[in-house]
Image (cartoon, rainbow, N blue to C red):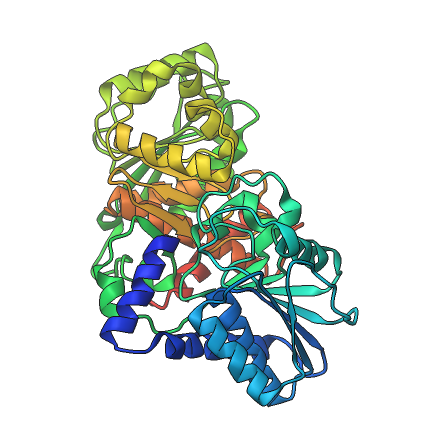
Length: 503
């Protein structure tokens, strides 16, 4: 799914108003109706509702929502905070609410007076939307601080008040609403996908309001949120006359002494992802372990017992992955030097391969074009320098992906894929249980398995990241976030494929 900056969303709103055509107040009513139904599906009638509305269109949405909830019988009290003029549509919804329910609205000015609420009240935050460009002050800041200290569940309309849609540099977190739920209108905001904002956004979901499809199609964006339909269109169907050679041969260099598990996990993941053949090159000491646990893989022994020192010609393989558990022994470092100087096809570099490169920065420009690297945040910073925020890390990932013409998979919640053409893909699958040893080795194996099957590197990155996260989500049906291990992800790769509905 393509999504947009807050400035672009305003333009989409305006295009819809002009070309549907629809009056802006009617578009607001449509948005409020969608928000209302989403809210009703989440919360029972018995809980009291306290709506806090601001002077702009976000406040107009909140007041319209309050009116609809009152019509259904919810006990609602509404508070309109403003120190001057209201937007035209907010004023219209103020009048509509007062006409139907004259005692349901209290207006507050320069001083915030805390409403009387119950401990199980639901607070609806409609103070400010994504157009806010400066920190909140005065009575608005007081209202936010009151909401955050109330102990009640908070539902934010479109975006938590005080949070910006993209970069956030506000140091005083007390003046940003800490929502439990955020109902984002039509699209997610970029800030929802960055780790520093999780404490404000809570659980979020989008609420469709039927913005003009032509405007969405025509408006360029480099931001994408990977969902099932995006992946379904990329998956390859298998011909019944296929054989193992049809699905390629993946080569994985993984595992030094005591790190045989990295070789096992990546090899199993490559096989489960559909590679026809998988060869594992590992330290000689790992032969018995790998061949016992993954008999389906071909084991290629290094000449040295404890680490990897050389890899033979790779031209016959359809995909090459290097890094899981290989260590940083001097001879292993020399092996990677030699590989990067002589190999010119896209490959996958992970874990210790990235750690070696971070200590030998002259190797960065030698990474073959369209290769995939898969750093976690600390590995990323060792490669590219310290980052002050998730937003800063995203910008750096995009810059280096374009400069080096590689694909950077920045692992974490909403894993980011930065591509050579500047497009940024955020993943929708995965959970905190996947923050476990070996999870990255599994992803590396999956990527190798996909590239062996002739998936283009960018497509392999998108499909691999999505299915990896989905397999982790499916694993939670039999595990908890605490108990989930990397092997559980592998065991659910098949279910992840089946869940995409291609089969």
